[in-house]
Length: 230
Image (cartoon, rainbow, N blue to C red; front, side):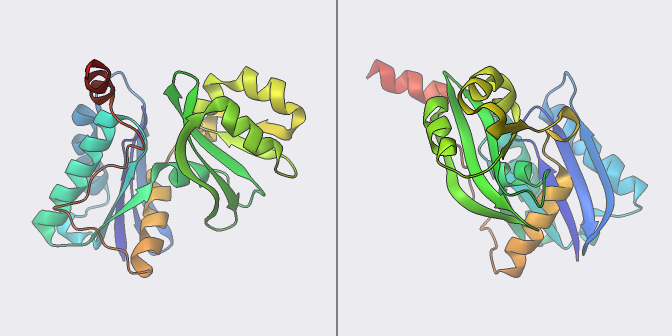
C-alpha cells in the first residue's frame, strides 16, 4: 500500500510517500513562506521524482491537529481534495503523536506545541513501535503539565516547540528528569504521518471527507475575541 502523508500543523511543511514499511521519499522545509505556497508544489515535486501520479496513492494521511489554525486547514483541505478526486481513503492522525514518533523506543515522551500564554498543546506517550497514550492530547497550562510529569518515574523526553519555548521552566522544575530532544529531530515528519495513518487504516478508521475537521483543542484567536466581547 502506498501512503502519502502530509503535516502542516507547525512551521514545518512536510510530506512523504511510503510503500508498506519502506520510505520512498520525503520532503521537509521550514521556509519564510506559507503552507499554501509550499505544500502542493512540494507534493508535486516529490511525486514527480518518484515517477508517481496521485492515482498511484492508495491512502492519504494528514496531521489533523492540534497546531497552527491556518496550517491545519491547508493540510486538511489538500488531503481531502486528493481523496475526493481519486476516491481513495483518508485518515487523520494526531499532530502530537506524529511529533512523538521522532523518538521511538523511549520510556516516556512529552510532545508539546506552544499554545501561547504559558499554555501548551501536549500529549504524553510511552514509546515503543507506536506511541501508547498516557496523557490524552489537551491544551493545558505549562505548570499543570509540569506537575503531571513530576509524578512519572524516570526521565522524560521533551519534544516540540513548546519544550523549546518553556525550556528554562521545565529545566528548573524537573532538573535532570527533563531530557530535551536535539534540534535535528525536534520536528514532525511526513513519514511519521504515513506510519500512523497506515496503522489507523488497518484498524478500520476512515474519515468522511465531508465532515472531517481540524482538531484545534481550543478556540481560534478570533473566536476567543468574539466570546470576550459577549
